[in-house]
Length: 88
Image 1 (cartoon, rainbow, N blue to C red):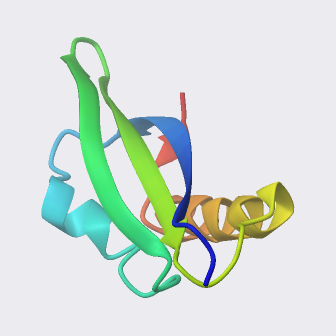
Image 2: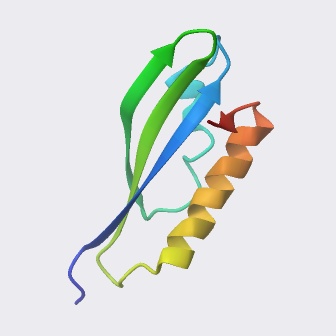
């Protein structure tokens, strides 16, 4: 058995004024069962609305390689782009 291995990635996003966390969450809900937590780190409502999210990936079965986690993050970014969300 492998010790639980965690990897976290931060994404700072520019989102639409009418977009909510629940509309954004569809972008990562079915990407991988290794995504264990998404936490809101920061939000800003100014000329543009932006948020920073921490994505935590974890496996009890293996050590997660950085490129494996990055492929999940890339998929999340692609899914967010489909609803008009871009990286800040």
